[in-house]
Amino acid sequence: MLTIALPKGRIAEETLEIFAEIFGGEFKFEGRELIFERGGFRFLNVRNQDVPTYVEHGAADLGVVGLDVIVEKELDIIQLLDMRLGKCKVAIGIKNEDKLDWSRPQIKVATKMENITKNYFAQKAVGVEVVKLYGSIELAPLVGLADAIVDIVETGSTMKENGLKVAEDIMDSSAHLISNKNSFYAKKKEIFSLYEKIKEVVQRRGE
Ligand code: PRP
Image (cartoon, rainbow, N blue to C red):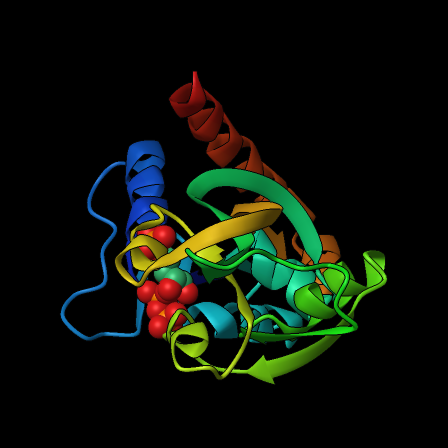
């Protein structure tokens, strides 16, 4: 049995569609259930940010999580496959009327992604004051909490509807299949066989 942690919402649904395509039948969380078993797999329905925790602790053998989360948390896991789902960018956002002024001694940035932000500004050799938020990041520059934000941009509509624009892209992200290190060795055959099947579907869909 392989246990797989999926991030609540669209990525979980799309991942389960891939399982349905491979194995046939219906793969779906019913109502508010957080766990279900089918075809030798056990699926966990968890918050996006919590997927790595389940995988790192070995409560799940595998997980599906955004590359941005993998990079942000510097996870001790094995990265198996880009699922090409949930494609987005991590970008710096500022108010439409502003310019990102790299000559300033310090820039105040609101974000959920403290490490990605600190590393990016360190590369540029610009001081950064990070204001850690948990959501609705786009609000921060509008009320003077920060000069800029570092956040996920998918369609761009959240920034647009709030009078913000992308100043710079930091990285591309998409959902990746990850494995717990011990599971990867202990359940190598099972994991590899699943990996091959998912890879085939992902490649076929990408063509
Ligand atoms: C994410 C992200 C942006 C928005 C980007 O927020 O933090 O706010 O989606 O998507 P868009 O470019 O398609 O508009 P989420 O919905 O996860 O909410 P939160 O940040 O408040 O947690």
